[in-house]
Image (cartoon, rainbow over all chains, first blue to last red):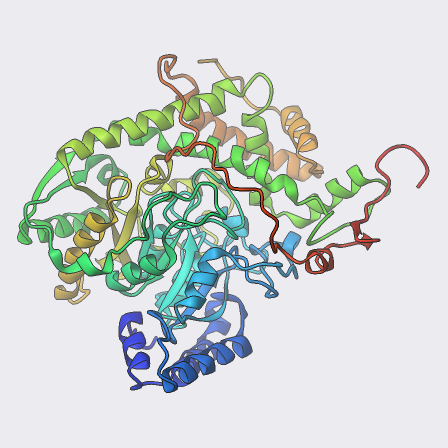
Length: 482
Length: 102
């Protein structure tokens, strides 16, 4: 693995002519060529389009035009983000070969900021999974130990950043799908407040929970990318009509006088080595002048159950569109109903089928109030629990995942055990709040540990200031265990 | 607050039909066991007394978002149709939908 270069530094060097976007791109493509055969972070590398974009950036710099905040920065896109004319598969056979007729808003904004799109990353099929093993195209491997999973569902994006294939990747986070793989691969992963980043062109999984965010090597890069992709979009009716975020400029303001709450429920769910790293991160907050206290939000214990009713219920509705009529796979049959059924039965993998059936069941006559209705009431309780905590605390701290990266194959046969990988990330999605995973040393097995910060809705400024403090503390530990 | 019975193989077959999925016998056996475990875990939610708690379907509530209905460029029809499995006269073509002859 090559030492990471930050997007901020790359863009600065390209903007002032010290580096060429084409040369930077070629450096990253060389790493991809050397290592992605083993890692399998990408479903597709868009080499020629990337070189054309990089060439255009170099021309803009040469002619004195402003090439944008992300000038020449290679970016990898999760393969559920629509790219016009470029295959977008969601790592599913049912969309194999589909070329969207439009770009996602985040793709448009990245391009306008000068970013160079290098390819589409592997993921759990339709973002349903925690290990990238439910991809129809085979698993991605963790660059820190190729016998381990990279996490999921944005496992390809996390592995791409960790392996030095791109300094920035975008992922989507419905129940932890940015933060959990970021933690397992030792990179930064941020889920913004619901509604701050447009979902236009993000293939829908669970629409009330899905949110796009960055995976990067530094907190500052996450802030930079959020500033570029965030802000109101009339094309997404759930996009919040607010000014675009400006978080990069506040990063170094510190956390003097803030109160950091260590979330006891998350500690109880985590392995001892992960708990030890979390407590070290809390000590770093004290050293930076914050008050740290333990806080209990018992409602988060109900998050997993509520999530595995709400998300499948929404998915069962969203995935009804894959019927063999308008795009993607069709398996012919004698009439349309039989064609729909044959197409879906061949096109979807086992995890997607499980979630569709779970959601259909949770919404079916006689069970809807007991399952889906109750889950929506639990969602209210979780929001109330967080609100209580945020009356005392500015941010909450806990582990991102209960353990470090597990072995490929270890949890595939046991969906419930797989679902428990997301126990610390799911409550944030149900509440719509922002959260970030920051690499913080390693576990007893030498693999990366991520600690997670949570903040109230729209408090990305506070979140990222605290994240910068924890990142600095991790750097001063030298990434070692103690 | 309803006591929820354990999921049966027949339930899964019924739900698969609703979701337009055909499952093999092996899949039915596998999924019945796996989904029952998930629903057992969800029973802690189903059994809570939350009658007084309002539901939240959307964490960052936004009310109806309207815009002027003005004509403008949208996605290209030819590009959309090019992505379809079967097309005839600018329309999506499907097999017969009712019992009549094609």
